[in-house]
Image 1 (cartoon, one colour):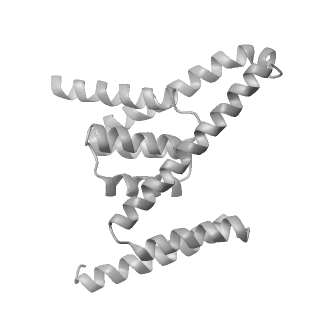
Image 2: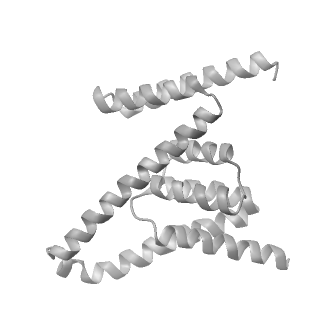
Image 3: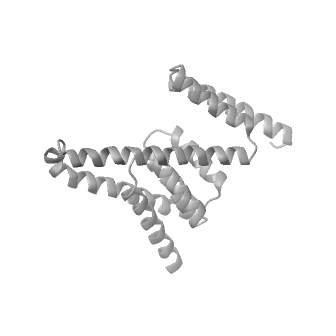
Length: 189
């Protein structure tokens, strides 16, 4: 029981810190979750984190919350999922509550505006890190078809303004086809 309590406390603190000091949204937090839960604590492996990222992205709701639920559940069951949800939701709630009192006084402040622009640059760098890290994982596993699908989706959305819903539907179809082909080829049921 004492070991379980230590695990829940460690899970809460790790998730709380990630949520409190991550600016830029879910994808930034996913990158930092990977570094903490895969690289540092070794609670997950790289493939599990990739799978959790895909599930979290395709599920309704905030990607950071969805990922924290999956990670918490994987590490410590239902109570672990509840722990990570609470730890992930509390910091933004507290920060927004505090900021709401003074935002109107700061919204036209040049220093405040500069800080926000600086955070945008940092977020862009972390997002690039996420994309490069995921691409390395896909390439390392020699998933050329998956990489081609990912690149095609990026090109379709960025250059041809294809609606994301269509990209998701095609991605689900191609991913299902690819998975089915792999399992049939390996003789799995």
